[in-house]
Length: 265
Picture (cartoon, one colour):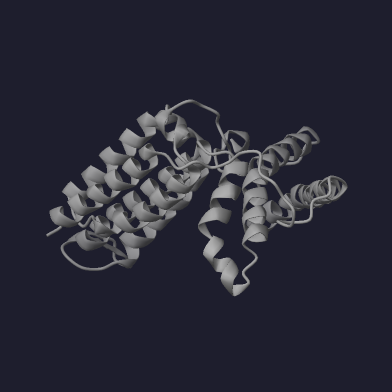
């Protein structure tokens, strides 16, 4: 399951979304994070779902493929949904279990917030799936360029974010290999008391951390050997180019946001 996770992965392609400038994608995700809160009833959420499905289709991916790769994250979202059901009160009492009650306001709020989180996860995942880590680094650096005026190390921050994103799939693959190796030696992770399960995870985390530190050291040595000195004297092989389609994508998103805002009135 861990090896199939899509978090941080890049899938090369030639779709409309792949061709967009990475700066346009980042700005679109930020705008979508704001727009998603405009929806406050079923019609708004229906339009949001339709919009995300359309973007997924334009990216050349299927919604089933995304759900299969984001199962672990959706499990956490289910936990969030259950918290809202049991903790948010108001409206008609649907289930009265004595020490707990499920009320209509909690159910509706839980559904709406879960839909928002699912759509945000899918949109951000689409951005990483259709944008290479190098392009993301350059885009973040370009967008944050004004912060250099106040001595913010923009290049270093963008590089750290890119490397972190790039190594998530690698660490997931490494974790699955360690789990299989430990299982082959007779280790069990899903049986016994909670204390035994936690203790069983120790043989996974120790080699995983050792492997992560080793990879980090190897990358640091490789960058040093190649003469990497941060932004100083650095040239770019890939030059970002803002096209008309990038402007059109942002305009369409703004119009969609205006539509959602009008619908909520």
